[in-house]
Image 1 (spheres, rainbow, N blue to C red):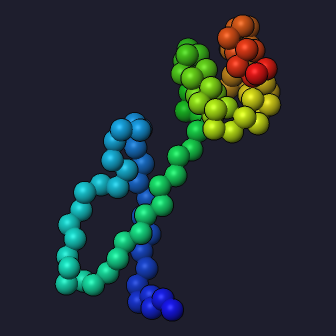
Image 2 (image 1 turned 30 degrees about the horizontal axis):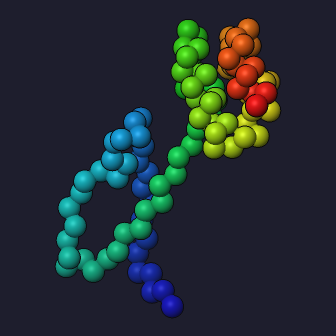
Length: 96
């Protein structure tokens, strides 16, 4: 049985895969507590990409499709990827 006397929640983000997600912080052994972390990676084909960033959008789409192949179906219709639809590389990616 768990005896929870206190509960806290926080969120951390990082823009680079090689960076620490949870920032360094002091631990006080007198507090008699444990910490648990959930680290999640989220990728979306058009997320965070503005005009003129076709290479980043294509790379994001490719990474997302590698993780979840069904993303290829969404990528065909994603308005954020409109600028890639004239590219043979794009169609090769989504028609795998």
